[in-house]
Length: 95
Length: 257
Image (cartoon, rainbow over all chains, first blue to last red; front, side, top):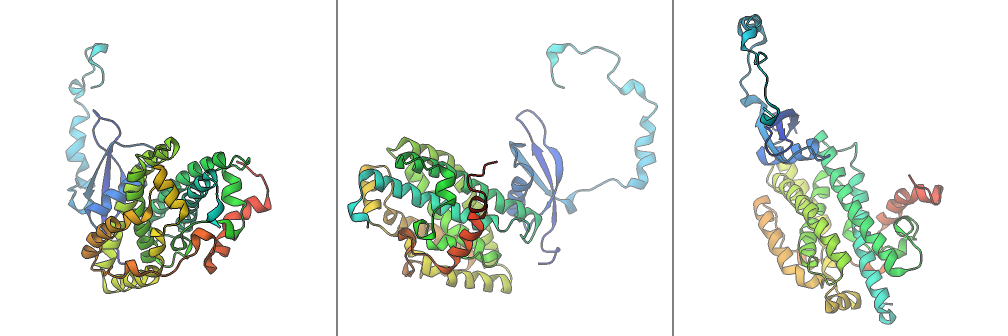
């Protein structure tokens, strides 16, 4: 079996209801059905998940590392965007 | 030999058969650990093996309680001679290639899904409880193995050839899955077990559906002729399997960890 026939998939797991899916790794699988099974077998063996998303790695559009200065550098001196200037009441809980 | 058994002996025999089925297939699947064609299956197959081993442990422990002779799960699993094992011959055969491994798993899991569903309403509380845990695991085993059977059967020329060869190899052993005798008649009458013959039509129908997608011909699955596992007459493969399986308990009797 060549790797062309078994593409790479990115795996996202939601650990609990109310939390969002988080990227946890990647697997190889021939199609989406097998990808879900492989993700289940590889990444949820210790009760890590309630829900799984898989996405073909090739379908992810990623930013170019060479653009990182123009994309991310300008935010470095804008501390006023961080919500650190007021207190969040405890009752608000997880944000 | 089943003619003179007491009720207790019949129940013991019934539970032991189930336990042996699960232990032996768990052992075969565990042989793939570190050898599977891809990392994903290297985890998937031992995952399934561990499910089956967990089911076997519960069944052995219960069998030991029924017997009441002080034998626990380890004694029953590891310290009997070959002719006292009661597993289906299908399950002890060598893994062969990946196609044969998956087809065997599918043939057995498809039966166990029907079996555990029926056992949910067993009058034996312990068996019903084991069924409740096993059914969820078994549904995944069916799903996983069926998807592979479809993909290999309807895959490349090479994978289709291997899947057809696997079917030819395993077909003779399939009728044994539905054998009945005084033990199965007893547990069915008592409402604590299932007469395997009652599951055959549904099993054939489930398999036909998957085989259609897999472009496999399952018409001869009912024409098996190999038999003997339930009375301890095993294939050549069994001795080698037990030599591996029993090594630790034979070399270090009573060992625990």
